[in-house]
Amino acid sequence: MRDAVARFVHDGDTVVIEGFTHLICFAAGHEIIRQRRRDLTLARLTPDLIYDQMIGAGCARKLVFSWAGNPGVGSLHAFRRAVEAPGTAPLEIEEYSHFGMVARFSAGAARLPFWPLRDYMGTDLPRVNPRISSVTCPYTGEDLATVPALNPDVTIVHAQRADADGNTQIWGLVGVQREAAFASERVIVVVEELVDERLIRSDPNRTAIPGMIVDAVVVEPWGAHPSYAQGYYDRDNDFYVAWEDISRSPDRLTRYLDEFVYGVPDRAAYLEKQPHVARLKAKERWCAGVNYGY
Image (cartoon, rainbow, N blue to C red; front, side):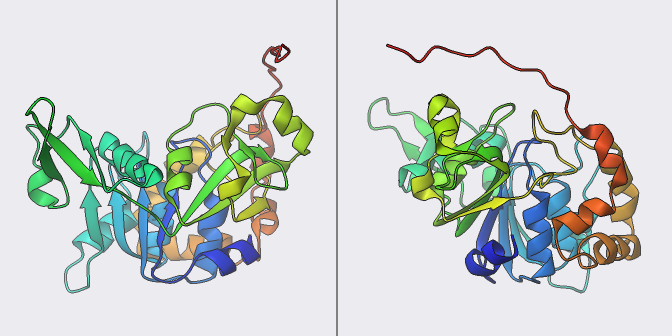
């Protein structure tokens, strides 16, 4: 992870760490914090705790997003302070709907300049975000909203498994990992385990990201904690609840970063400070096989 971030994540980059509640790569976010990257534009459908930590650590200049919060708990308080604090350079924000962000990644992946959508009617988002525009459909004459393509400098995706060439398989709840990866200039894949190419080829429909677009593969078990990886470990709900109090206080947030991010050299050392995670380990529940014969 240290090498992948050092090589592919640079100051000033637009960085995407995707995953819709599931497979959120906290390990990569922590390494970016440890390497003290600055002036990043962070983009994500639903920035939650990892972006709150990165904003609190001073990594971010701008946030491009659709909804921000601590799911099921409350606000992201480091994010709110960065936007609302008087007398400082505030965090820039660029807000869309969920589908607006999906459309931006889809346009970026397709190498199109924009994406049309039936959205934003009756909302104030176009008023506060001048990047939301409109176009007249050449077939129906209908006015459609448009959003510009989003092509990140680097996208980081956490997944269950990949082979050494970066062919990456995901199952369970998915978001826009595939679109964000295809839209990006560089792609880092972080996986729970590295598997033989023959296993990937035996179940090809589960391959979400092909190795041809992957720049680095990092094997990082428990790399999504306190998020979860279907089939490997459950979501650490207690941590999400605890983050409400941690993030409310700049001092408590600093102490958290000092102990669990700056104070450890890597993910293995982080896990040594989390003895409770053993109870989150997933039980086995196998799906039925399929016949790919012909």
